[in-house]
Amino acid sequence: MALSTSQIFVIGGTGAQGLPVIKALVADEKYSVRFLSRDPDSQRAKSLQALGNVTSLKGTFADEAVLREGFRGCDGAFVNIDGFNTGEKTEMYWAIRCYEIALEEGVRFFVYGNLDYAIKKGGYDSKFRVGHYDGKGRIGEWILFQNQANGGRMGAALFTSGPYMEMAISARTPMSPTVEDGVVTWRVPLGSGAVPHVALDDCGFYVRWLFDNADSANGMNLEVAIEHVDYQNLAAAFEKVTGHPARYIDTDISSYWNGPLKVAAGLSAGYNADIADKSTMSFRDNFTGFWNVWKHGVVQRDYELLDRIHPQRVRSVEDWLKREDQRGRELGKGGLWERIQPENITPILKLSEDRGRGIL
Ligand SMILES: NC(=O)c1ccc[n+]([C@@H]2O[C@H](COP(=O)([O-])OP(=O)(O)OC[C@H]3O[C@@H](n4cnc5c(N)ncnc54)[C@H](OP(=O)(O)O)[C@@H]3O)[C@@H](O)[C@H]2O)c1
Image (cartoon, rainbow, N blue to C red; front, side, top):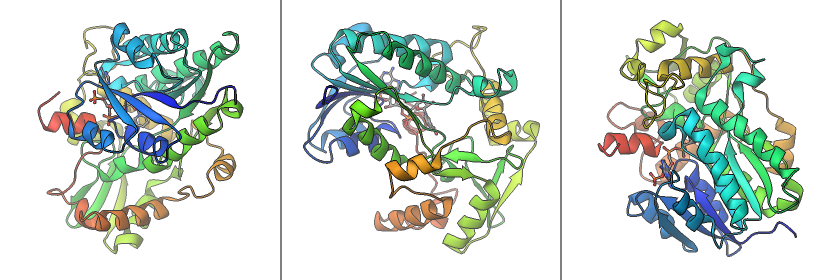
């Protein structure tokens, strides 16, 4: 009971991850949420406010006064700092300040939206350096270390996710499909590796579980995934679910960077990070490390633990595709085959949506 919470401040609430997290938190009367957004009038922000028990705070996480106002009066926090805005270096600074200000303002339980500390898990080999992973993973370890030293003033847990499964059927992602001569095709540099893809809906369940079980979850690093998705299996499952042909083509890294992502390769991996700053990774370097991590099996998951925590979790890519196909039909978007066509495919990330509208 000591770490039980009722009012949760959420950073990243309008994002792909934040939407299901907030939905799960306010699905009943147990929690209310205040979320931060630079634009509380956006369609995503409005859809959250319409859930009830949800209010917004306008502003940026890169501002101490805003953070203080956000955490004040809240006893819980879910913080997913957008590293694709800040870049790795600045993300680490603001994540640390979030933790410190939350503690100072009286938050009792802090859940950090984390990613694997890839370079460390890869044996400190720069081949596995992924700025948007390491920037979170380092701070995740730092946060759990503070748990031991803050005299019980604030508990914390890590929610370590991974590439959303939705990214493999969405526009403008590192694993967007193309339709080539009627065949759905994933051209990625994965070799015979596998990606521990995450179902966004399950993110909502897991984060809610951390808050519901804060006393026992205190200090925990909950690392989640559906399964390690081998892309031959992704293609086979897609064919099975939709009845349409699909394939995976293992692609060497230089062909990959000469494909649809060529235009982004030399840009900064964080749109507010200066590419002239020697600490800033380019998209090419960042996502080359990213694919190396999956290709070489650097990241593991404890699926038995996840089965115990979430017995109804999505356990295979085929199950996920079936559910998504069904869901799309119910929402009037059509089946997966229709949704994946070049004229229909849409982004899942708010960042890509905003870019498409010329906002960022
Ligand atoms: N893509 C993946 O597969 C994946 C998987 C796991 C983790 N992640 C990590 O999740 C983070 C991005 O979240 P997402 O995946 O939900 O992306 P997203 O859909 O693009 O959402 C970005 C979120 O960050 C918020 N945001 C950005 N800059 C902000 C600022 N200065 N102040 C306040 N809020 C700001 C946006 O809010 P407003 O626009 O409303 O202000 C929005 O809620 C990244 O760090 C990424 O590494 C991504």
